[in-house]
Length: 102
Image (tube, rainbow, N blue to C red; front, side):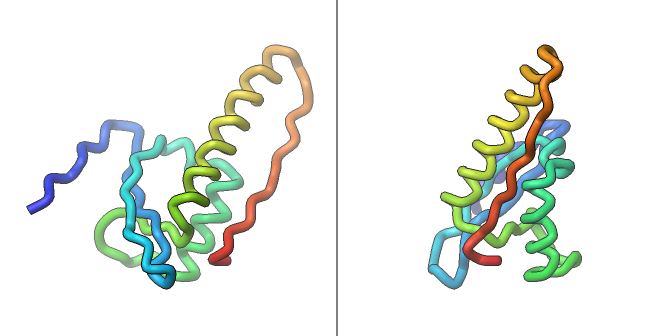
């Protein structure tokens, strides 16, 4: 039996991988704050369309591992830019992200 990775407080486990491309699902642990990011919300909306709300197990996200890693990088980059811009009072421009699976 496979031992599950602990999910620390303030985080959530997600499962990523495209079944139609025979990609093995990967498990990631991400900060709950991602749930409020507009880029991540796009992916959550797509997950609802594909899987609905009532699934068992970790939150399943309909994108490839590569797309998810890129999304995570964008969120972290945006988060870093936002912190720097708040210090310097600059305007923050958001970006949009599209997934092949959408």
